[in-house]
Length: 632
Ligand code: ADP
Image 1 (cartoon, rainbow, N blue to C red):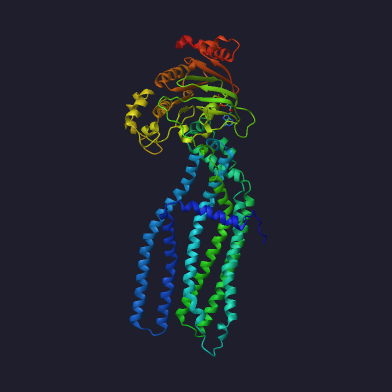
Image 2 (cartoon, rainbow, N blue to C red):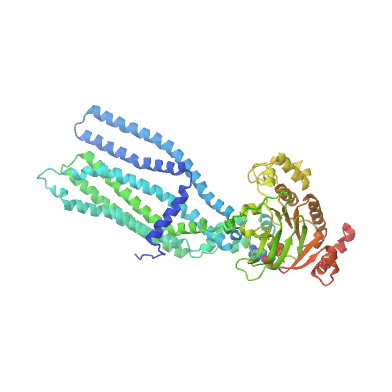
């Protein structure tokens, strides 16, 4: 059998990985691990009751045949069995409950990680790839954290089996064959050494072979990884949701998806995979055969010693049972150590993922709380490239927001408007230059406090399938009056009257059967209400109105402008007409701020981009002017 070599960690690294993994479980509620331990200890100890009492009963039957003692032994055995069934079911239920809680806690580790992760990392395909690999290994074969936890069971039960079986088998060596017997050699030290050698076959060599066979899994799991990931997770997640279901049906994209997943062909790497499965099976078969052979020899030794008169028939049951438990226990410990070693490459991936640092949370300075909202933000020579791209999405931006100012940012799609907002909200940090709040680099501020300054409604905002009130307040605790006021200001009040449970109505049906489906325009009003409820000093509307027509967008923007009162507000649009009410308009083009001024000043510059864009867009409105009465 050829032995497959694979990436090696040093012993220290192995131990370090296991301890770091266990530390994660140590942070789980204590009852989860306690229930597991109690259940495993109890289940491993139970077989010894029957081994011991069966031996006693047999000895009594073959020996003194005392009826009273026999009845006592039988009743005691039955009673203990019933008791153990009862205790086992109670502990089992507790452990099963805790087990499912452990499963949820394991999921929560990843949910928490994603919730806390820097936005730039969420958008990073490499990190998404890293996570889907972890999920694939975990779901497919339980590698990673679940495997670490299951080896804990194996190690504890192995240890209990070892201790109890040594106690129970001890007299096998102290009870001697009667003097003068032709089987006296069974008591010689050589016989004991031979027995230990045979035993080691079943407890060391057999598990070792099975561990070597298991070394193929890290390699096998890398086969066809991309296709597995694409089909098992990406495609599945993609087609399952309602986001794409309409288009898939209208354009009959089923065939396109089938063709891209390649499921009709022979999956790539399947032969290699089968080769690994065969390799593993060969080692396992050899390991099992070896342990059967070794056990057979041990049983022969015990039987011969009984035959020679060292102990009675009950002794055979007791020693054979104890030795079986001993070899099972030791094998379980060794196999689980091997499993830990084989699991470590997977665990390493999990820990590397969980260790991705949060750069955003490194700032410590508190943001000054100001009732007068005297906050001033400035972009100083800011340039930005998205990770792994060569082109600048923003180039040398210098821009200052004065308090209470309303600024419009206009420009064609792709001109860098949203990128500027992403930098402002620290979703990304500038590649060059700095952004300051009241003169201090925004990276130095406590991230959560800094984020509290902004209410942003993005074009691709998403609401949660929770209640309307929770969506508006972004919290389970809220001020109902303020929720109602915000919804009324954003123009949702008429629709609210038709909501079956008012602000307690669930949005969508993900979590509640009587949740309501809402239209794109209604969702947008809720998103605006959410921004109003937050009542932050800076409000940004980044084209959440893109689905509306230009006139409706103009109306939403100008109405919002009245609602926000004295706060700083930034309006973003690629439609110049929507922002013409603003005194301060910044024109972006190919990542640069190229013009700034009021509508009248900008339009007066006939060679400027604003003039060019205005005319290009106005043409469309001019044509429709008569039908819609709109004049930009
Ligand atoms: P706008 O908001 O003006 O439509 P954006 O700021 O969204 O423009 O985009 C500016 C440029 O950055 C575009 O060329 C766009 O393709 C690119 N871009 C936007 N988001 C990403 C991203 N996550 N990764 C790489 N490039 C991006």
